[in-house]
Length: 185
Image 1 (tube, helix red, strand yellow):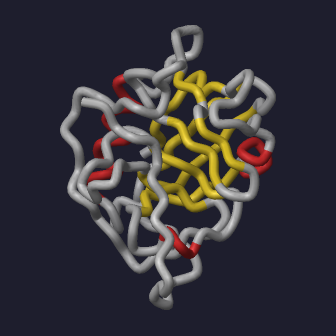
Image 2 (spheres, helix red, strand yellow):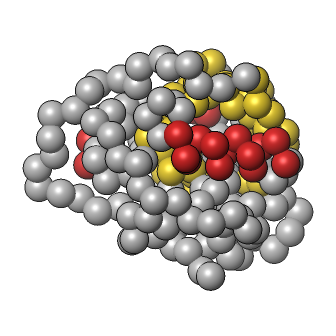
């Protein structure tokens, strides 16, 4: 099934939301990035906020599905998107990157009152709120128009400088790669 990349819907009014993701008891996703950006990004996963989304991302990371996946959509001042495990592998044909997911089922939205601030990680989805699967994005800056419309799954706690260095483009000319993604519990 084809999935559209992150579809952004701007709303005239957004509710007053929490300004930061509160650190929770969740596991950490550790992402080794190579390319223009080189280094390690650590994401504190918000399993207390989005338990089903976090469980699916952890399962994908543990299975190695995220290893070798590119950042296929990177918009300056907005976000870096990755996680297309079916169409986004480095070294392959990336013409369909951003349209796929995994063999696992799509997820029911787990919206919260957490704001999309710099470093917050959210799940990408198609127009259907219950279509998130494997793709996720990391915010470069505030994105209040996403609040309450996309599932927050965590926050970068280390390596935001690496995220900032990811090559921009839709798709980038030479995409950066998540070479290895592991889980620290």
